[in-house]
Figure 1 (cartoon, helix red, strand yellow):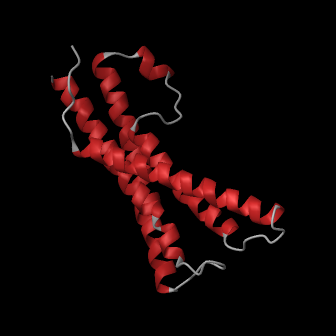
Figure 2 (cartoon, rainbow, N blue to C red):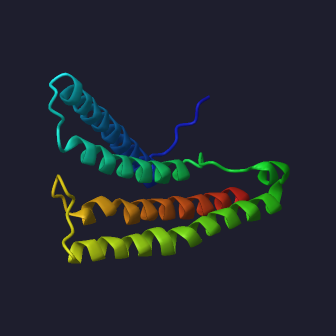
Figure 3 (cartoon, rainbow, N blue to C red):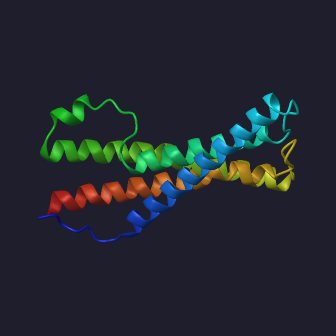
Length: 164
């Protein structure tokens, strides 16, 4: 018999991030298609499409990496976790999540937040679209917060499963 999973905040967050990624990818495909059509069919390349696709790729890559980290499908060498069982495996998995957190906090959240702040204060804008670069760079701390949440949630899940 199939067990129905309760709807949790994490499940809702997963769906929101996945939907955002799908929408970004769809818009990016339309944008690049328009770029090709305007360049080769109309012989008048659109000026904004290159910059827009570049910034959308940044958002897609950063949010995508956060989503994959939340699904525990990121690239990993898992020889040791496959060989371990029980408490040693639990400790190793918690250690891995803590190492990820140790990267995400200073680099993505603090460093990315600082980058957003500096570009906001300096009022830097993109060349063609004239969008504040702070909006483009905001994906770094946003993705960092997502990864942080997912890693803490995974640690809680490991501990909960061990105590069950």
